[in-house]
Image (cartoon, rainbow, N blue to C red):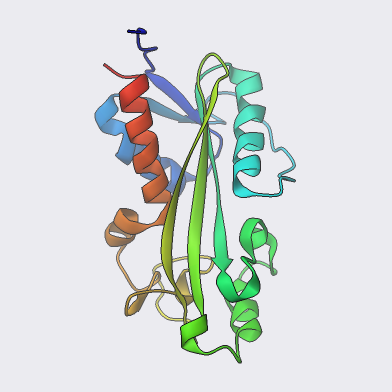
Length: 199
């Protein structure tokens, strides 16, 4: 049996404190120290010009890996609305001016009945190990687009993404972190790291 390659340090291709905190919490039982790219000395901001979430996640991970040569993870995520053919998808973050994403989407769906407003949040993580080998894991969270903004405990499209009877901006952070697309992808990453890289 091939010996596991032990990982005790992992760089996340982000400087987003909220993302870092979430990743540190989920991976902490593995005893892996998670650093931001700034903490690791990787000052890079690559052009995310991929045609899907996997390509964008890999672009981010590879740009940091090329600098630090340590295990690196990067995620790319977005909202896919079925009746819009999967849009905004990879363009979720730049679909509308910041702070106007919900308004634009609600306007586009103003004549769409509830039964056809199905949508999902998708998150894909690219993990590159010390040897440069890449693995993808992903997670999804299914729901519907509501008819108005609801709640204040969220960002981006959270106020209009209905998960059951509540929007993502109406449920607690703890609850959201258990069911979100990123949480699902991080659980998959946890399993991958545990199986291949941890004792």
